[in-house]
Length: 401
Ligand code: DI6
Ligand code: FE
Image (cartoon, rainbow, N blue to C red; front, top):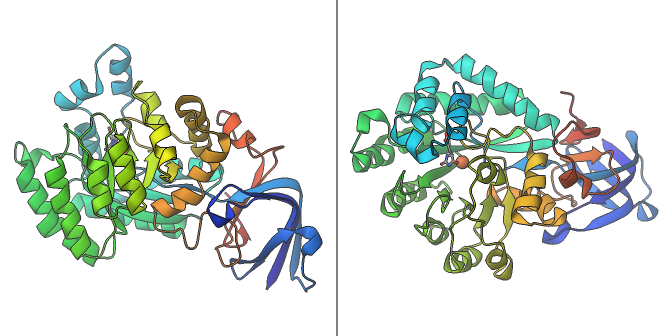
């Protein structure tokens, strides 16, 4: 059945760039976009349904391409400690940080993890998100990483959102492997990844490349196994120091390298050559009160695609609004609202390997879009959070939340 959506303006993001059509019409059929253009040029046809959008601005459904939505407990106590002057690295060294979330996540049942993650994910969906990536990484053992990945799959089955799961077993060193990081990496490579991939729980593989996590050499071993398993890779790189993880990621044709505050121009050149997307995470930059800005000029100069994500996690970015991240990308990183919008649609789709089907509104792509009751697309990056009046359409069908 064909459906007509009209009386709207559309920020299409077509042809790989920010582009708009005023007084547009969209024709959807069986969950896909069949036609889109100026309403004056609408081909004559029969429509099973016609929706008037009353002058709304339509954007692609928002895509949050980097989250750690599934975890037990939270770390507001550590937030208070940091406000007293204790650093993130000091808290981690004292057994808090990621390790404390690992304890809480291991202790939680699958249903408990599902229920708490569902609440957080609903916040993102109410903000216009129609696709999301969720990482494991707070289990750090085969059973508990499996538990998280199963919850991630279930979220995609039970909520109106497309979910990509990423295995981040190489997030931190679990207590069982204290002072034996290389052994843990071997365990990930020989046991965890092959088993979890065989169970169909993994769409991509990620690692935390940092002086307080894993070295580039350790990450490379994980990447080699991911490659053998036919899984694309991503990397947390250059968040707190410069180890050139982003160049390593580029060598493995990573979908994305994420954070990147400390990356160099050489890293940007390598990422541009491999088409690796730079995922910037202004929520973590803000929440950790970082001062080193990602090198925006180098990224722009070399044509690296830039995505923006929430990094939703209990330690460094308890961010429940992707639109708030648009604002932070503009105020903190000096991105334009147009760049920021491309960063949560077009380039976020590429960062998830979904660029062929999602991220822009063009014939042949999935009909995921949001009709916002706003005056201009820049309004999306302007308001600080809140629940904007909108209509969310996923695969051509209204989403009720
Ligand atoms: N970088 C981050 O910002 C999060 N993970 C990562 O690799 C932090 C996760 C946490 O502190 O719980
Ligand atoms: Fe992260």
